[in-house]
Structure formats: structure tokens, C-alpha cells
Length: 303
Image (cartoon, rainbow, N blue to C red; front, side):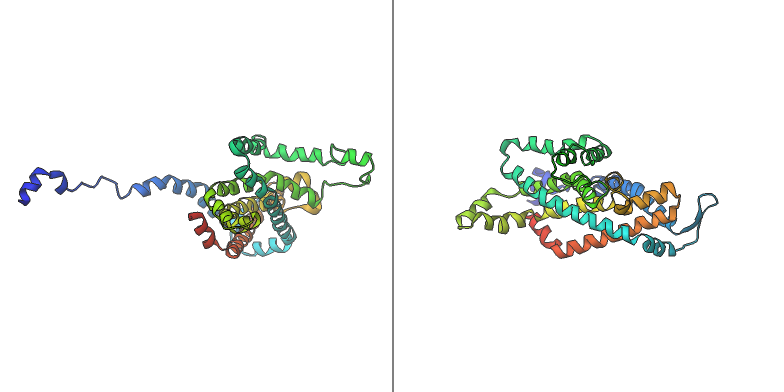
């Protein structure tokens, strides 16, 4: 009987032969990504670590001496600029969240069929060069520019008032340039909120404020978490805004790294500063993730 069944239904008893490379397929698919990271991230990091431990000069050359004292030297010399960069980045991130969350909320829940249009308008400045967009703010914020000039002419501002070369101009430029990095992740998270959940909260006699604080905001935390990371990290390492809109008293660590590398040709100091900045950013990010509760954020994202 068993032979008959096997003869009539050979497909049920015949096992499928494993395809060649079937077990390796997931690893082969991810291999290009690993190769990309190895070529353009791991290898440069190893080279920069080696460079930061070298001594010498540009004329006589640099030699590997494993001189760890370079890290202590650059921290002592540029700790003010490092703290300033972290402070400017944090303030710009808070400003982006304060401005960007309502924008993302309005697009997600109020824009209707015109969501794509408003998202396109939000991204439209990105079609222009980062440097040109920052330079345009230099024109707008000039002492006698299109913004301050008329206000000074009618007497609302004193003639000596200025915004350029101040922390306000640098933080404003950072906020403007990195605002979409906050809006887009928050918008994606808000877009995933099920309208039935909001309707259920209203059925349970929750006010709009309670619905937002207890339903919408917790569900949008994954987007806020991603937006903070995408904004804070590049804002702290930026040097364009401080170079164009700032002055000597608003120099950020990115400007110091650029000067050490391209002007002073002190490659070990520039590499050491880069890793000091990287370490400070990682510490700040881990502290933020710990405070916010990464596991809760991931659980909310999974739901």
C-alpha cells in the first residue's frame, strides 16, 4: 500500500533537492553592503586611527610612533570649540523638533491629498547647493540686508545691531539646513498611526490634548528618535554654517579640523580631533537613547 501511494503521488514522498548556494543566499545578498562599508568606512577609519598616532610634519613626513598624547593635546587646545559644537548642535536639534513636529503633524493629518505637494516644497531647497543656501542667509542677515535694513531705517532696531558672526546666526543656519532631516522621519511615523486608534480615544472621552499626549506622541517617538539622530550628528560636525554665518567667537570643531588638515597640514591633530568628536557624539547619542528608552521606542515602532 505504501509503495502504491508513493507510485501514485511521487511528489509527496520525493524531497526537494536543496538548491546550490541556497543557504548562502542571505549572506550573498548582504555582501555588497558589507563590502561597501569595508571599503568606504572601515578602511578609512583604520587609516585615520593610524594617522592620529603618527608624529612628524608635512615636509619631513609622518612616522608611526603610536603617540597617544596627540589626543590629550587637541582636547586641551580645542575643548571650548568641542563643547560649543555640541551645544550648537543640541540647540539646533531642539529648534528643529519644535518647528518640525508641528509641520510633520499638519502634513500627516491635515494636508489631505496634497501631502506630496507639501513634502516636495519641503525638499525643494535641497535641489540647491548646501553652500549656496547658507550663503543666501548671509545676504538676508547682513547688517543692511533685506531683513535688518528696513527695520533699522524705520527705527525699530539700533544702527549697530547685527546678527552675523553671532551664535544666533549659526544656530539659525543649522536649524534651516537640517530641518527636513527632522520633519521627514516624524512624518513617516505619524503617517503610520492608525486613525482607528485616534477614533477610539475620542470614543473614550479623551480630549484632543489627551489624545495627542497619550496616543499620537508615543506612537511617533520612533520618528522623533530618528530625526534627532539625523539632525544632531551632522549639525555638531558642520563647519559651513559657522564659516559663513559665524565669526571667530563662534568657531566650531569642524572649522578647526578643516584648518588643521588643509591649512596647518597637521594631519595627526586633525585625525585625533575627528575621533574625539566621534567619541563625544557616540556618548551623547547613547545617553539620549538610554534616557528616551530605546527598547520602548522599538516596541512602539514594531506595533
